[in-house]
Length: 350
Ligand code: TRP
Ligand code: SF4
Image (tube, rainbow, N blue to C red):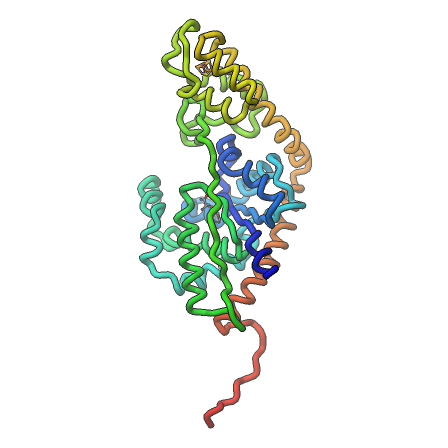
């Protein structure tokens, strides 16, 4: 019993190494990871093999991007003393489990994953007619199940992948019951990160591809400059026009980052034209600078000693390998394929 409780308290999540992170990543995922590490046995990893599913033609940046993303994680406050932070390709058991899952997974399950069609259409310039691209949600299933994780914090776009993972777990458990009894793979639950929508400087969702981001590394003058050009309530043309913070992207920023006091001041001042947008944006910039300053302070030690982040990844990967191998011992045994010597069975019939 204690065993199943401790297993269900395990959390796993990963990110592709796509480059430096922005405030949208913080609000949408990392702020939640930082909270989870206080309460759960968390495994957070850089999904570098996943990057290859779309970037296989030129993997030259994958390794550096992986270290860069970990620097961002450490900067926001992920703590290697609390969470296991590692890199997927340093834990080969993910690949072994992916291979075993590939034997039992019907093609149709992969073909009907919604992201399969979507991403292929969005990245039409690349040849994604590959085995690896079709199979990447199954690699994700292996990522999750190899740690027998109970919870997977993800955004809405990843829920279908966790659902596939549950089906794969059920199918494996059905074919190969655990020895002496029970199931090797618990079915994980998605932990939907309920994040408020974070607008970028142009009012659309903050995203690298729109060029509207505020980076976690942006220095104070950069943040203030970006806020100055941020779009506002379009109905508020002149200083004397009243506005509506509920339809203003700057108003959204206040709701996410500012104190209740400031939010009230913005609401009253905007609606009565008592404050100007420049002043209001200055307050929003204050709030952002306050969030970013400790991140940038923490980052310094890792920038001064570039090997530090690598060493953290290595130590985490060692811990991850131990946990992953423990699951593989169970999975291989369930399939009668343990690595141990077994004496030949006597033929009972003869
Ligand atoms: N596919 C996820 C993404 O694109 C990243 C990922 C890979 C992941 N393996 C995972 C997330 C396991 C959660 C659990 O964002
Ligand atoms: Fe937006 Fe603030 Fe201007 Fe109101 S005062 S429109 S909330 S920037």
